[in-house]
Length: 338
Image 1 (cartoon, rainbow, N blue to C red):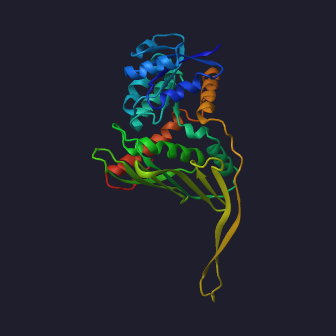
Image 2: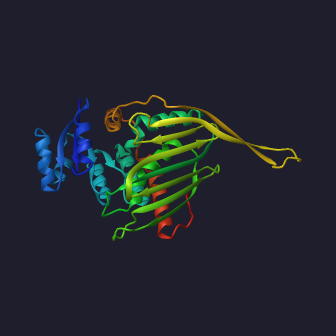
Image 3: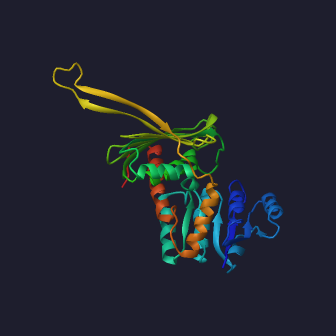
């Protein structure tokens, strides 16, 4: 039996969700809700067989709807997700789950109490590149993690209700939580505003882990070029992930250093040996990440299973976001992550 799917929000991301979920076996797109009339007309034009409405409550009252997709501004996530869960619907919501950890935790607890699926659209977890990186790291290919360094910058899109931290950071923080099993212990974030608004358009963030590994991030809406790069350094090998690359998005480098103690008569007591081996670009799964996510979410709804980006996973991301925001408010103060 196919699952009835409804979409709330047909703005920037909503059309992508509609396109991917509408073509999956086991599901049928039957509602689109949008308050903007121009977007509502566009939804009606692109999906003539789908019912459209300006009032999302019509969706909640339809017993045929089992799964609701939410692609609305972050400030609306908490009330909309809560309404859907209370109406007995499973939910996939765009990142981040809510404005803060407290709201997110309340939604996760509500979903668990209602026995409903709650997932967050951390799409990168379904990319072939991140899947391969996870395989390499989990398999011990790079050795012990030393550091992760990421740059995600572009020109816009400026948001009116959240800063660049809440807009871009969930991508990288979800990847970090997926790849790195060690527990983060402290976080620092510093940002600035250059666009005559009250929200930061540039943020630098630094995370330290209990095993002395570190992660560093740069997020920026005011950059002349679009960069999407991540470096992962291990004690054995290193990974470079460039999402802008057309073919070789992930490269594994057999490069590194080893440090040994010299004898007492050595000019330098610490001797550094450099290793420069081969580079390998592994084959990646080329399917569209959002299509893979749509299939997985529908499978999890049908089989009552948890997807990789369920509510509990989203809470890990929100905890880092909250701590980074607190550090940002206090000018880069080091904040402990409980």
